[in-house]
Structure formats: C-alpha cells, structure tokens
Amino acid sequence: MTARSIAVLLSGSGSNLQAVLDAQASGELAGRVALVISDRADAYGLQRALGYGIPCAFVPLPAAPPAERAAARAAWERRLLSVLNAFSYDLVLLSGFMRVLSAEFLASCRAPVINQHPALLPDPADAAAGRDYVPTSAGARVPALRGAHVVAEALRRGLGATGCTVHYVTPEVDNGPVLARAEVPIVPGDTEASLHERIKIAERRMIVEVLARLA
Ligand code: GAR
Image (tube, rainbow, N blue to C red; front, side, top):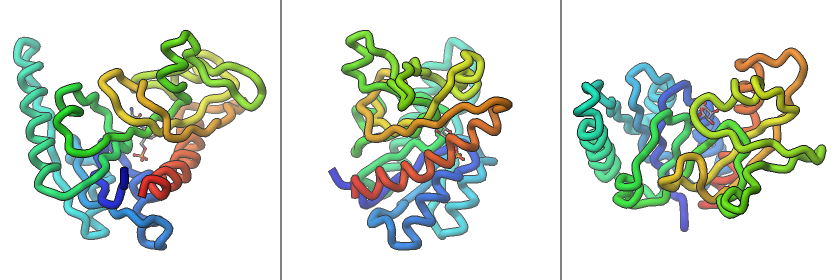
C-alpha cells in the first residue's frame, strides 16, 4: 500500500494535520494531503488546510429524530464518500474525527482508513486472546481504553501511563491492526488538558513517521 495522496477527516483543531502539512512542506513526507473534510464548520483544521490551498469540505451529520437517525447517518456517509471520491486518494486519515464510520462505509471506501487514538491500544489478536492491555516500559499493564473520552478515563483510573496509537480502522471501534504506538507518562497534577497536550506532542511525531513509512 502507498499513501501518496491522503484524505484527512477531522472535527477539531487539526494540530496533527498541521504536523503533517509541515512535514510535507519540509520534504520529510513524500505524500501530500489531497483534501480535508470536517463534520464541523468551526473546526480550525479547515482553516489550517485552506491556508495551504488544500481543498476542504464541510459535511455535517444532520440532527434527526431517533426513528430517522440510522437513515440520516447512512445518507451522511454516502455524502462523505461522494465528496471523497471526487478526489484521488490512496489513504484516509482520521485525525481527530469524532464520528464512528460504519462497516458499509469502510467496505465502500476506495482506500484504507487509519485513525489516531489518544490512548494505547493492543493488537486485535492480543485483545481477542484476552490480553486487552499494552505493557509499559515500567512493566505495568495499561488497559485498552476505547471511545471518545479516553484521556479523562486514563486519569480517572489513576493509570501511571497512557499514550497514543495509530491503527487501521475496522468495523470494530478502536480495535484495528496497530501501525504505531507510543507511551506517555501521567505525572502528578496532570489535568485532562495537560495530559492531552503531551499525548498530542507524541501523536504529531508519530503520524508523520507512519505516513512517511506508508508513502
Ligand atoms: C488527537 O488527540 C486524536 O488522537 C484524537 O483527537 C485529537 C485531535 O487533535 N482523536 C480522537 O479522540 C478520535 N476518537 P488535533 O485536532 O489537535 O489534531
């Protein structure tokens, strides 16, 4: 697989996208960001991409009453795919994209999808064998944390370390084959914001390394 032409999906600040764009500009990265899509109009990541002249699209998931939610979500995923497919891409990077993509979307997507996750995740084979944790450098076991609030969860559980993972996206949420992971210690006095910022420092380095490897 090559990752020469990357479609980025994001919902927020896009500091990881910035690291990728900086690596692209400095020649560290052979691939290039071909387009950026957000489900949020106010995602600062869109402004970062526009500053580089990269095509951007805002594809919101409309609110719907419970009975119509599944159909609205399926229609939204079809719109996402049609925007993606108006471009040429060989990798989709979820970089702070706070939506779950369905098995149908993943099967229809023309390229592999990878995700940045702000916690340590084991390989799916380990998780399936009951080893749903990642050993740390200190010999501890950090349980796999999945979902949207894993930084707060790491603090709530009083873990000594957490980290970040880049993995392929599969229909099982936050449980795809791992491309890279990095450990981040939790220090006394950490808040969700301070810990997430340190995790993101590791993530920015890691995503550039992963994309350079895939390209
Ligand atoms: C990153 O920490 C990424 O791992 C996380 O959102 C942040 C995006 O930061 N992704 C998720 O939580 C996905 N469930 P950024 O907008 O500053 O690049």
